[in-house]
Image 1 (cartoon, rainbow, N blue to C red):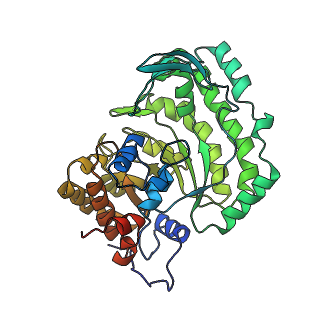
Image 2: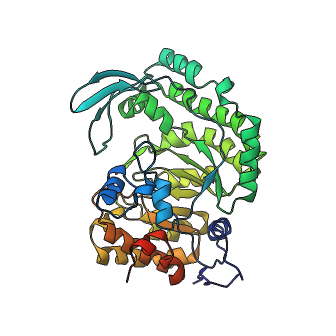
Image 3: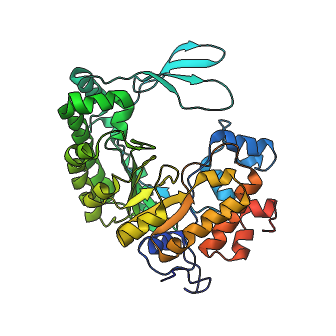
Length: 401
């Protein structure tokens, strides 16, 4: 069994975060494996700050605490982004319909009617109405929000030059965003609506997917031709704990053919690490994504049955992984955290796998337990202890292990 972790000094100077990411994802030797995470629930960050664990300096001007600021506090390496203006654009102003002591009901910038709880803890909104329900509403939505030639999509040349230089010289890995092929449509039609539409009017649903793909084929090339990229990322969130909301057959026949040319375009520009962020049980979609050229699964939630150890055994080097550490272990104490890390370690050591919590760190995770997770994870990744101790969190809160 190979072990890509070669230790400090193997390459003379430390690898940059960018070099490290690229080598891990291509099964090459590294000094130590990349340390990358996926953010935190806002209420957890606020609670940690109230408890005095996070410095007030991390808070943004809007009162929220940016994920990146907290990640950097825990020594997490970062991605930079250089992306086209894709998706629904431009948005309308939010229209508040009703406010009560407990809730606020409003139409968002796309015309979705939603109701949210007020207060400290943020929950998933209750969606009341969606803007697309038939061909007429789709065409109106398309013309308003999905015109690839809309002037608002034009990125000023000065910004393009700055992003181009950043992408060339950054020591962090640089990614470009290709958005969503069906997840966006779900947001505009609704979960129930998209399920019915896949049976009642599959041609209309496929037309939406095709329009998004065609937009990408037009909007991505000017960015890809100027940038220097280490990965491309999108999202779907189209699965439940039991599997995808649409049948694998629908994906294979109606969605994947439109994904394929976009994945080909990315690869023609040298991008061969391509992920999608899809929660839930994705097992039946993995072979379909791999077939069209999307090769990295993220965040690979474990609880619905996505086992990174089993998947790496099944697919070998064809499959790359970001995430895959069961978030629920963080609620179960140090023994469970260490057990989960030890379970993952052999496949992490083989390469092609950057482990991290399999979604945003949820509420009610004890700060001390999360520190233990970071400490033990980074040791497992091969990071030298003096570098781990130099993370801002361990300078402020010395950790004995």
